[in-house]
Image: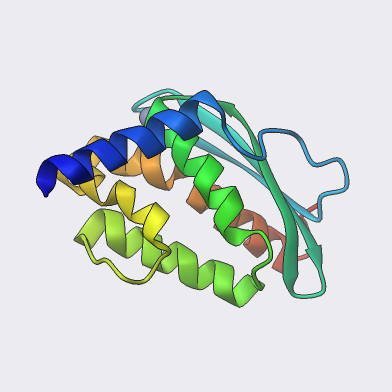
Length: 146
Ligand code: ZN
């Protein structure tokens, strides 16, 4: 079972690293933030487009390791179509997954990141774009986003 999980983990991360989804700048974004992980050299920008309380589009650009890029790709896919409240709940669930190993609060495809818990330096890689997403929402709330 462990090797099956390792294979799934590898194939999902390699796929999203090789062909990241939503890898572009959003010209008409309502919220934007940058995330940096100096320990690894990961640097990403995240854009969100909101209509009312719903995230109708999400994108990212930047560079970094396979884990950070795959995580950013899956993050944009996960929050697209969600309300701000749902996106924040996903952040909390993902954070609990990679820091506490707590499963069941995020879609199954995100649970491939559960393994990073064993590697604290990789937790920052996996959560970088999620922190940027959350920061973008907070800046928008304060009226300084966009
Ligand atoms: Zn990294």
